[in-house]
Each structure stands twice: as structure tokens, then as C-alpha cells.
Image 1 (tube, helix red, strand yellow):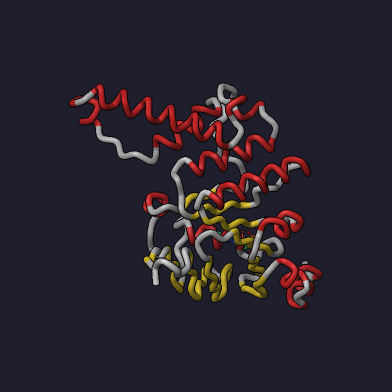
Image 2 (cartoon, rainbow, N blue to C red):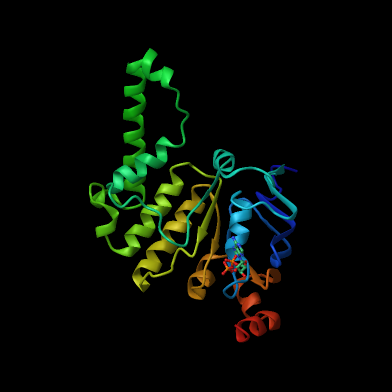
Length: 255
Ligand code: ADP
């Protein structure tokens, strides 16, 4: 049933890089409205999993399904149109643009361009321009970025830059938001603000999957956690369940 089934369904996915098996028979499914945590030691395949789900890598075998639709071979651009957005471990903001312009660029990518629109109907283009500006302002207000709108991101605290990146991913109004280590480099107060932001994103109807090393954040934010080690799922459950799992303790001691 599509209405009650998983939003994201990863089935027996394996990803090989030449001799290396980065993902080994990984299955996991995420229900609509979840905040799912993906944890695991370095090199356990977490980012590879994001790359497979967002279409940057193609699974060697297995299947990825989005709301029941097979997206295993779907390209990143098409996946973004289908409602998958992501952030990266390293910030990818345009440092020479303002915060507002960074958001506008992301909004602009979500519409289709044809040169004929400009040639045939300039008033329509101007109206669309105004609509984009309104949407950008809404995103700036919603994520507490309005005060920094006309500043280039590079001069702002790291925590704000992270927030800009998430706001930019939200410009596409995704159904599924993949966050790759969103708390990396943040101080305690900024981690609290991030948690608040992620909850409000989920409450507005976007399902969230995050890779995170900050276990405090994972414990407070995620209902379900999936633990990877050596490219395999070694545990899954509530945060207290996985933390108590012998397989998890062993994987981290060996790290
Ligand atoms: P994690 O995100 O958990 O730290 P990764 O998914 O980045 O782990 O990496 C898992 C394994 O796959 C590592 O051994 C890494 O070196 C390897 N790997 C990841 N991407 C590539 C790639 N593009 N080419 C070759 N090996 C890769």
C-alpha cells in the first residue's frame, strides 16, 4: 500500500568500487514522517548509501524504491524532481553570493527554463521573478536567516552556514531530505538549533535521514537508528537499543 508503505525502501543494495565492497546487502526502509539516524564508524558506507539513494552512484545490485517507485537507476536531477534533496559533508555554498542569492539560485533550479518564455512573454517572467523573491524571503524567515540575507555566507558563523545549506535543500520542497553530518563543527548551542530545525522540517511533512557522529543529537532526534559497519547493517532500533547492542559496541571498539 502506497499510502502506508515506506517512503524510502532500500532492498539488498550492494555497491562495489573495483575490489572494494562499500555496501554489502544493505536493506532498510524509512516510513513517511520519520527522522532516521544512520551511524557507524568511518568508512562503514554511510556516505556511499546517500550517494546511491540520491543517484550519484548506481548500486551494483539491489534496489532503491521511493514511495514504491523503482529509482535504482534514476539520475540525481530526476531524483531531485521526485522530491529527494541532500546536503554534503563539506558545505557547498556560493561564497561570493549573498545568503539570499544562494537561496534564489536553489529556487531557480526547481523550475523549468525555456528561452521562449523570455522572448514571448516578459511580464510572465517578471511575475515569476517576484514569486521567487517571495519564496526566498519565506525560507529566510522560516529558518531564522533574514538578518543575514544580504551577507555572503563565508563571513557568517559555521552554524549559520549549515543552516543556509539546509534551507537551500528545502527550496525544492523535498519529500525526503538527506543530511550528511549536519552537526559536524557545530558548538553545543548550534547543535540545539539544528535539532529544532530538523524537527520543524519533519513536522512540515519532509522525512529526514541523517548521517551523524554526534550521538547526543542522534539520541534526542531520531526514533530509529540504523548502524552500519563494514558496509553492512549490524543493528537497527531505537537509540537506546542500538547503543546497548553487542555488535555495535564491538564495531566501535574496533574503530
Ligand atoms: P562513511 O561515510 O561511513 O565514512 P564511505 O561511504 O565514505 O564511508 O566509504 C565506504 C568505503 O567505500 C570506504 O572504504 C571508501 O574508501 C570507499 N569509497 C567511497 N567512495 C568511493 C569511490 N568513489 N571510489 C572508491 N572507493 C570509495
